[in-house]
Figure 1 (cartoon, helix red, strand yellow):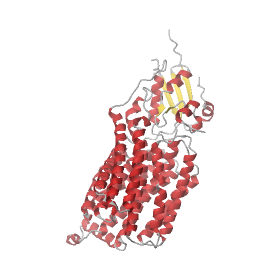
Figure 2 (cartoon, rainbow over the protein chains, first blue to last red):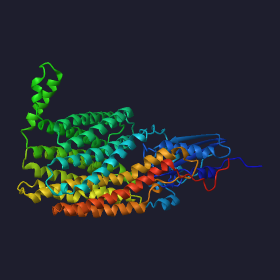
Figure 3 (cartoon, chains in turn cyan, brown):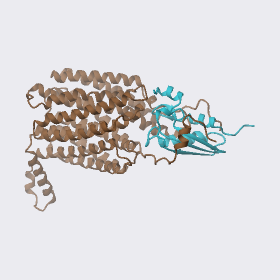
Figure 4 (cartoon, chains in turn purple, yellow):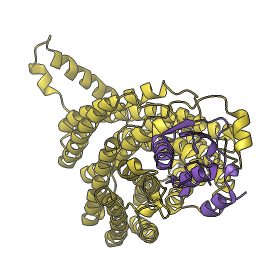
Length: 104
Length: 474
């Protein structure tokens, strides 16, 4: 019997498969994912982009949905883009800073 | 259940509003067709320069150098910049392009008009230059209208929007000036045979009046004013404005002083207005206004250096390095501008070569290389977006930098610098063989650039999709 409960760790791991191609780093370690809300098979991600009006916005949002819908037991994945607060490099994780060479 | 992320507390406490509608950039094929046209023109221009290096080592007022200059300016620079603007303006200003359809029509008109203009300049048939130039003016009119309507949708006006709006005004004036110069070089005997009420006669009479007005100005001064309107007003203004958006975006930085950025744009506008009038009137104030433009560019350089120093991304990629190297070319260009604007400068062959050097460094050393630098960001993006967008989150995808070879890019960078130095030496020494050597190096650099473009474009037909290392379980 397999465990079909989605954990936040599994969701975040899946979102690490979505990269920002300009920076070459995944959106989780870039600090672009503000929150992941899981309710059974429904997942709602609130996230941002490095800059408002980013031309990659539709691709990245679709990528987030694709990555989540590939998980058990996700049947519905919603993405909400927000620019409040705006993204800042300080939001990156240590891994993200190492990957991008960001400095503080 | 909410995931505990490093910044989740901040996000949870402050997220109140939904995201704005994502900027809808036009379809990738629109900017790409302009960029490909531009690149083809650049390669043809480089070949032309290799076959006729004497064009750089003799005075620049002849049909061939004017034809070649228009090939570079209209075919390469304008095509590429216009295509890039259709893509970047909506992105930079967080809005939508007013009309993609108009932009497609503009492309067709622009293509026919610039090819015809270059051809007719080469034949020195100014009447036909005027006809094709009118087509160019219609195309530019569509471009300016489209982007003006786009600018009117901008939710938050900023220094980038000011610079783009200014550049559009200067572009319009450049075209008007160019057509007026062409009108002054035509004869209008045919108008006498037309009926008085004929609409064509009215137009021809109008053109004759414009030509008569332009005859009040020295033809060389009018040409120099036209060139400054285009190169400083359109291209330089755009480089200044767009870099306030793109350099922070690519280096993970931010504008350090909005006041300084705004000052650079407004001072550039003021200096250019004064410069164009003083060049046209052969006034001694030309030097003063040249200093105003130099001050504007110095302030721009100051702000750009501050942005780069404060960046979060420690390593600069070679696209950004190329762009910044091109911007650094503004320092010798400013020095040359000050020398050439000096009221007591003697008019001799060496001064003529300094003018050639000034034009060459401005168009090739500064604008062209700045665009090549940015094309290393723009073309990979367009191809990636076209090829890989549908696969995000489904497969492991290359980053933009993986689409081309950095080693080839570095080789192209240094070959370009060598080509610039050798060509400049050839121009100053009035040595055609040396200029040809420089042009060959520049062409070699462009060939390397073309290799990278080929690598990037190859992803359209052969995408590199890899499965995730640990695929999700479904």
